[in-house]
Length: 150
Image 1 (cartoon, rainbow, N blue to C red):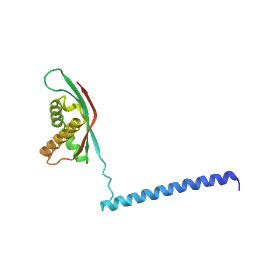
Image 2: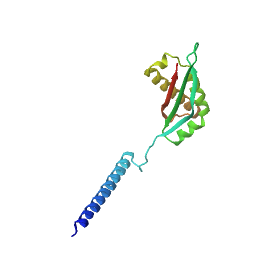
Image 3: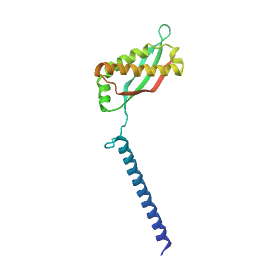
Image 4: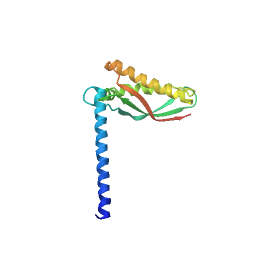
């Protein structure tokens, strides 16, 4: 047999082996997901909702004006949670503007203060959704951008 044909045969066999092993591992992953849920495997994927436009507020009280620009996204557990957030967006934006503008320069000077602000914003949104819909499906809040001008 020609050495070119032998080489091509090995390449074809290798490709078939890769395809077969990939499909077997994919089938095993699906089985393990189905076994974990007990029913049909449904992938729970996070939904991210950017709150647009970004927040631009002045903060810090008396004296020189200070500005903060915050671009925020929310992670929700399902489409019902996403719809709830979108429905109450004016209320959410209002309360976040009030929260962001009430910050002090000392608080935003360090990482702990920024993390505390993130947690307070998340708690504010949770309170709004609990009050309005009776449930909160927002899992987390992220700062995509946080610019502070002192």
